[in-house]
Length: 243
Image (cartoon, rainbow, N blue to C red; front, side, top):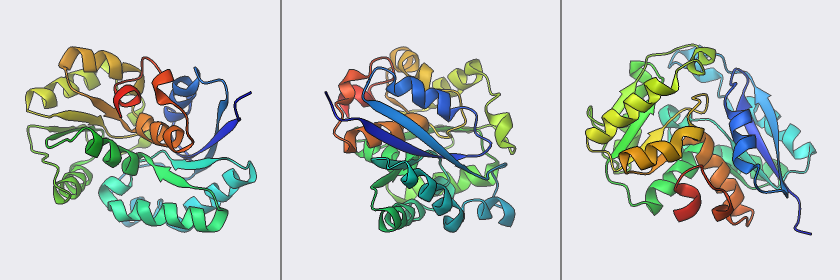
């Protein structure tokens, strides 16, 4: 019998998309289970209140609860490092491992690994975020050598996180197509409350480029680090087959 693998996922409290999507992604691997711990997040902005939601001490409390389940890996299924800085996620993972002894990763760190594997130069970003949040994300990706331009980014100016999950698949498909037309080598649907991961394979076939959803990236990286052959996961995008 293969070893039972438990994945622990840190989840924004108002997120209604990532849990069912993550369950579906791993459903074809019988020895993998997924467990979730929430912490308060209601809206995404650069206001002091918006940034304070991602205070490391609050996230650590949720991580400690996952450690009670003796999970094999802890993943932060969220994209706050996009606007707060990638080093925020690196420090969070270090703190989780120091406190619990459990290795950790995040949606954004996993995405950045995948961008390296796919040798991306021009990144397409599709997000629900406000103008200033999107500007910060673009700046941070430009700083690590990813070209993101006005032609390869689209954002929907949504503040309230529960509203993000209401964004239709047809809207997302249009935006993915626009950033590919703008020259993107790879597209990221960059928010774990977007209901997008299940459409990735269709969009890859339609537009001819890899699509890296942030619910998918953290799941992929956790499985990979736990020694799972991700090629067993079919229908969820090229990342599982090629990365």
